[in-house]
Length: 378
Ligand SMILES: *Cc1c(COP(=O)(O)O)cnc(C)c1O
Image 1 (cartoon, protein in one colour):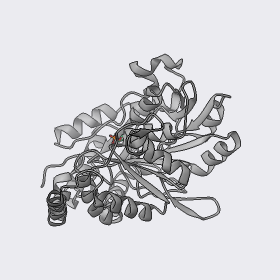
Image 2 (cartoon, protein in one colour; image 1 turned 45 degrees about the vertical axis):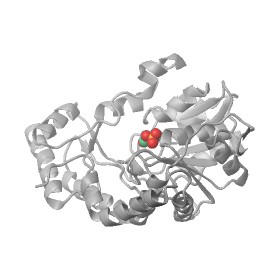
Image 3 (cartoon, helix red, strand yellow; image 1 turned 120 degrees about the horizontal axis):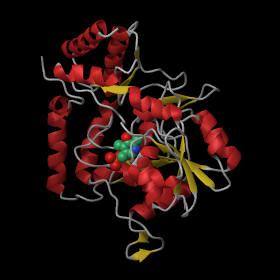
Image 4 (tube, helix red, strand yellow; image 1 turned 120 degrees about the vertical axis):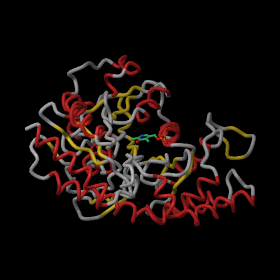
């Protein structure tokens, strides 16, 4: 059996090596490393895949969030509602811009932001909501957009983990995750569902004026070279990464199906196990399984993780400490006990290996190890 990793990027590359190698060499030969034709082509292909008017490349997913907030004109002191159960980048940029993060609860089944708690957290200073489509499933965007409309708030979707996920509105219409709010962001970090071979990110919007400001912010606040109308940053997707992403985008749906097949295998194997709760599927979103995350009850999570590691199976806790209890963010007036669902989940979640390359033998080894653990720990 091939050794099991959380994500198998070597195996994935092997299958597209010829295509990728020649695309990368092509960029080298033309030597247009910044803003080459590959960047423009990828932006257009990604916009067309997502069915959104503008897709704008940038240097990484963290920058994408920061640039979106700058382009929306958020001002120091403005409140931004985000989940506490997310990767730190979502909240880091809020703090960096002098905005005030306000943490909302998540739903225990989907791990996505709880619209009812968002409503409770709105104040006269609230300016934006940042739903995070955690682990590959779109948050309840119909509810969030309704709240935003009622209170005149911006919605910035952190879609770093759910690119390709389809969301269905109550009226039956569908949109891709990241194209529903006023602006959406994603990351092309190598282990993300659409990952490049270094750092990269993108920002999506259907708003022409906002798209123009986003491009301006990305490019030192400049539209005409050496004339700077607003304070900007330097954040670009480079041509080599764009060339690789053009190839990987063509495989994205097949990659999603491979992840879903692995998830279905896990689900079937774990059905009926006490103390194991397989990931809940949202009724209105497809799941692209950035992570396959179990909830392990009975205080057995850490013992299961240790048992798997002894069987050479990596398993990860995403995330061990919620952001409202992190040292860097403890100044925002929220304490242990304030977000009980989030705090409970942090004690229970365990992500199993998930990638496009898991084979039957590996999946069987993982599921047998989980079942053996629970046979001995009822
Ligand atoms: C990965 C990730 C980011 C940051 O992306 P980088 O490209 O690593 O900067 C932000 N938010 C979430 C939810 C992520 O998973």
